[in-house]
Image (cartoon, helix red, strand yellow):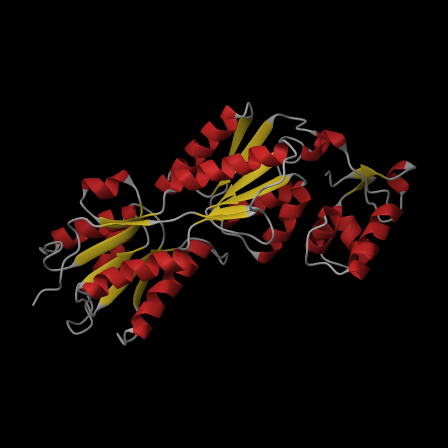
Length: 353
């Protein structure tokens, strides 16, 4: 389903600044949001019959029609799928990308990769919409977005699948990050820890990263349910030293607030935190326990207890969803939840007596 067409008569048509009609023009003409136009034209839920009729009338008024050259619904005009990731150099993104690429390539499609790192790159991506007319589908991998950026996704005009999170009414595959955090903190509580800190990472410039929000939610819920006081949560900008900086802040707290265990947002954060603890002369887990999330092989090397979120499996399912959509086949499920696994290793133990 394309999002552009030419008004009969060329550039002078009503509501046009250059002769090309897009979803924004239809939204303005109908007096609704771009998201509402997208839902109405795709026939999904969340739009009243009256509003849907108004959108369709606006599309007719503006001669907004399907353009097969730009539409994935034309049967795959380009043979390409875009994979959009926030960071190519993170383990999670690279693992997801590799699995999606292998799955999509197995379906005789090519892959274009877009790294959208930080507000400036996101702004440029959503301003230029580089995937339009270049691909038949887009797989979005855990990309933090602001509300306006979410709406502009509809302007890309091709099938969209969300991997590692969920976004509006697009097909998605993810894990339950609230449950992941509750499991991690519950493991520490079960060992006897009562002062539990958390190191999270954020460089999203006002955008929301659902996995971060949900893991923080699960952490704070567990502390509250067990009467363990206020959260001891520190935030550091993403990078190889983020865990070390976060651990340093936690270890610098007064003795009565210093955690005996730390829940880390990711395995690489935990590895960096581990090194800072050792640098300070502490033993892991005798003096401080560490638990993290991912399934990164680096966690196994450092013997870190971790929640494996099976990233490659999430990505494989997202790739298969994309191939089904491009083949015009209905999805059995528009949302898939992948199970996670607690992998106990040597970095967690009862607190020091």
